[in-house]
Amino acid sequence: MSLLRPRAPRAAGIALAVLSMAVALPAWAEPTAADRQTARTLLIEGRKKRDAGDVAGARQDFQAAHALMRVPTTGLDLARADEALGRLIEARETAYEVVHLPLGKAEPPAFTHARAAAAAMVEQLDARIPSLVLRVEGAPLDAIEARVDGQPIPRAALPYPRKLNPGRHEVVVAAPGFRTERREVVLKEAERAPVDVRIALVPGESTPPEPAGGQPPPGDASSAEPRAPVPLWAWAAGGVGLAALAGSVAFAVDHAAARDRVEEDCPGSVCDRRLHDFESMEALRARWNRSLGLSLTLGAVGLAGVGAAVGGILLRPRAGAERAATLVPLVTPTARGVVWQGFF
View 1 (cartoon, helix red, strand yellow):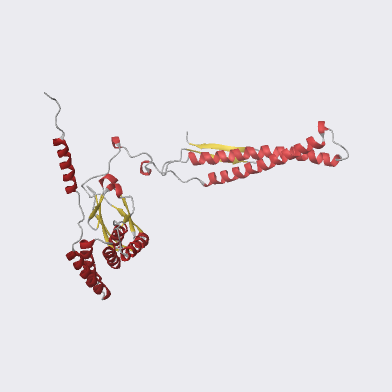
View 2 (cartoon, rainbow, N blue to C red; view 1 turned 30 degrees about the vertical axis):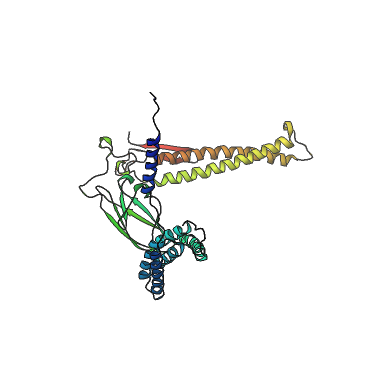
């Protein structure tokens, strides 16, 4: 007995499956003579209506003719009617379809010209179609439900520009527990219009999440007690201190210059008498000592002034509280510094 089985049934099954797939796929049937004659009449009537100013009526005729024939000429007339009615998105879609219609074996010149005109229309309409940029605040993105002219916008597409026809549009934004907000926007050709919507909580419906433990969030200004204003003497001490530090730096630079001059002209503390006489040597030595002394003195005064200012700013009392202690600058002919005074 042979164990081999005939393959015919399997081949028949495959052929049946392929046939069923072919039947399931949409197919465009060749127009009949009646279709062609009807479409021709519709085009003639539609062009008469268009020339008479009835663009909406002409569009209906062009749409019917294109449904019958689906050729470049019928598609181009339909796209131009949509463009005239301000339906730029629909016009662009039909023009794009015309450009990509299958090429016939012996296509007439009218079809070739219609394809070229449709390609130019696609490029021109791309630049004219406006867009709306919706920016929603007040609720998390995954809770927002937005609609434009009644059509829902997927949440993943919310942050991106939405192409729309020119004219008036209604934007509706909602979220669970929030008030529904409506906006009307009028788009112009080639415009990129931002629409800002902030939605608020419905009283009693929901509340924002509170921090754990009922404590106010870190950095909340309401949780910090206000401090008294910075005292005037602190600003004055800081200004004097900064000015003194600047003077100290200037005299330090002058001292360094005098020192370099001495080391160059008087190596080993012996000056060349051809370059310096007694008076110039004394003047150079006095400059050395004077610059050094002033630099050190002004540096000490500057540090004391800046320190007093910082202390006055950091140790100022709370607003309305009794001043317990404070720093007060002390500058006299014989002493310079700060005094801590207050209650101990």
